[in-house]
Length: 86
Image (cartoon, rainbow, N blue to C red):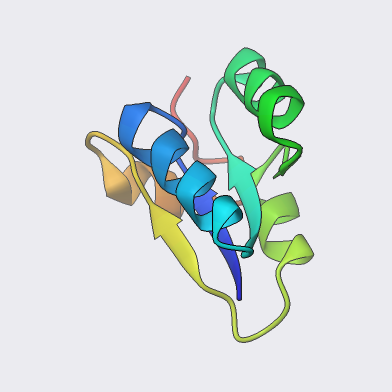
């Protein structure tokens, strides 16, 4: 199975690791570049630099798991980057 995970905090990062350990292909995204790069280096996961890139890496039908603490609407509505809060 192929899955995208948005949010690499304690819960999202651990979920991505478990899925990878079970043989799933995981594409990850975090709003913080340092977090993305560290996670990719530690796990070998593909870390997308934007939500658009994450979606492009996933084959349809796409499955994306959001593991963000709050403001899910901001994450989803800001997928093109133009509306994303600073």
